[in-house]
Amino acid sequence: MNTPPTGVSISASVTDYMVENLCRRLEEVAESRARATPEPQFQDVETCHSWKCAVLLTHFKPKEADKHRMRISQHEYWEVECLHYMKTFANLMRQKGHSEDGEATADHWRALTMSYQKLLEKGGLSSSEIRKSRLSIDNQKYWQLEADLYERIVAQSEHEMREALLKKDESQRRRQARKNQPAAEPARRVQRPQPTNLVSGGIASRTKSRTSTGVTKRVLRQPQSRR
Image (cartoon, rainbow, N blue to C red; front, side, top):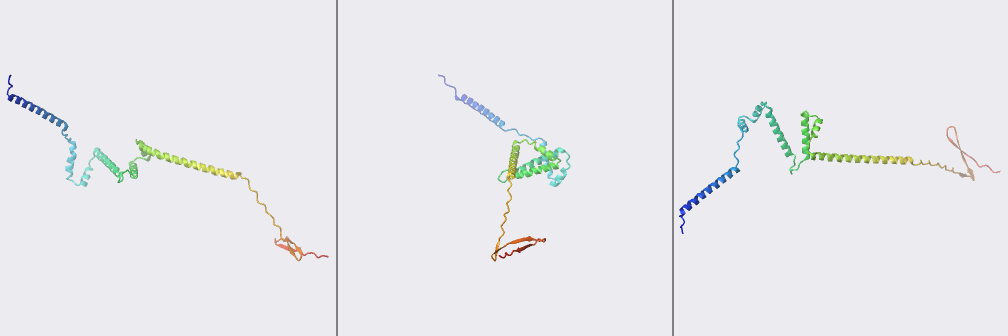
């Protein structure tokens, strides 16, 4: 039998294989980490002006800086700041529009809505223009709540009108019934008989006569003597 070669050559080949395999795996791990880690994104030069401005503001007091920046005449500058304040104000009002327990309060939003309407009026919009703008709201839940309110009001108004008509008809029917009843005959006056008195065994009759002055005289007739 042929004896196998010494183990020196076999060890070298195994070592080379292991080194090669290890290097390949290290390269795969490095590539995997490179793909997982994004390359740093450097900001443009324009975005660094905020840092530059912050450094320069340290040379001025806040009121002094505000006075200086009023000299800026580019409308883009003031438009950006105005829109920023509008967004900030909206977020602030949204936070205040909820009670302590987190529930939205209608009273707050109602008052704020009226304030915005006044601002629009001061800005030059008429009442009709504000109403027209409101009609462009694209929120069906908003319109559903308003329609439900009007529906209840109209139903209540119609119910009250029907009740008023029924009462009016009933009143007219009663008046007509009273007119159709026969007129009651006037009560007849009963004449009471005049009383008679017996004087000395005879009948004394009183006669009445009226004078021109309306005074009544009473004449007492004496009984005739018997012959």
